[in-house]
Image 1 (cartoon, rainbow, N blue to C red):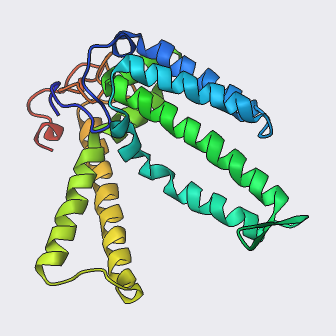
Image 2: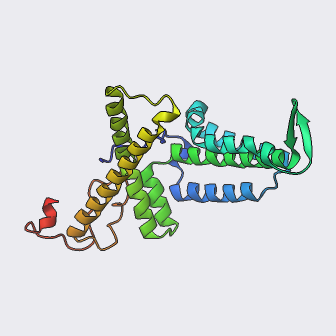
Image 3: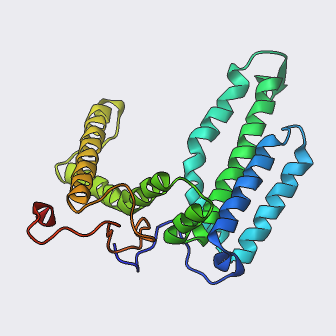
Length: 248
């Protein structure tokens, strides 16, 4: 990946939020989420204040609200779980639109939806206003373990690769007349997912062996862990041209 490549979650802009240091934005997100999680789910007006604060930040960032809303699909599993809680929870019941729902389940569902939605919106806002390379540099500045930053860097670097391979597998299935329209087709989709996992795992092994053959000892030069870096030059001396690793 060249330096010109961005991430699909990032929205290019030059607002004051975009220009803010990445490590400050990461720290602010962490503090915000700790406060949200620690807030009692019965303090309903406070959640309105949190939402207003997020709306103000999004407005200052000039990121279109629809851009954030479209990417909130990641929250769907939590929404489904929250909708089921009033039905499966025990305790006093209350009738809502002819349905018998548990009061504790309703309160728990509200807390999950409110805190989860605030967390998703805040995280998407950070991703939309921060380049991946700046985000990783900010984590390093916050003294996050270097190995963890490397893992995150490679995950971002190869996320698009794996996504594109998944798309090619879907196109190959559809070109052969396959379309997952019922539960009977799930085994085929599951086998495809397994094949994708094995290919990704093998690719990771090959990349790691190639790095070792070039003298990788567990640390990279500054900036090499970021997705924008074009060369992952190890801190040790580079092997000579006769080293077999140069042809990996």
